[in-house]
Length: 104
Image (cartoon, rainbow, N blue to C red):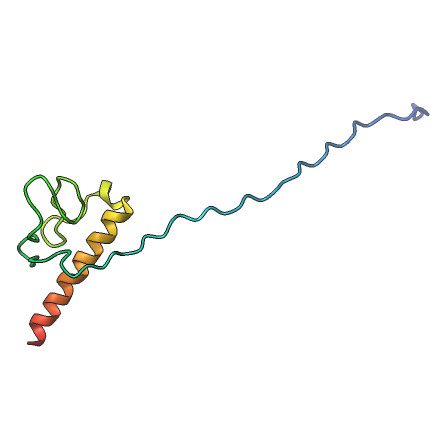
């Protein structure tokens, strides 16, 4: 049998731990809905608002119609927070119109 050697084997030094500092959480800016009474004036469930014209939709600000009951919001515009907030306000306004019509 072999005898254990008397000299010590030098083990490599352990690596130093990486110092980790937690990043500060970046908050996205809040979208505050801009309330205007005449923002969607003239809009009904079948008709776009008075300010809409061909090549410009008041809800999105682009050339695509995004009436909540007729066309809806495209996937591209769903990621635009300003257009999405305006679309939600228009949809809520139309829902309130239908509730008002039912109650009268």
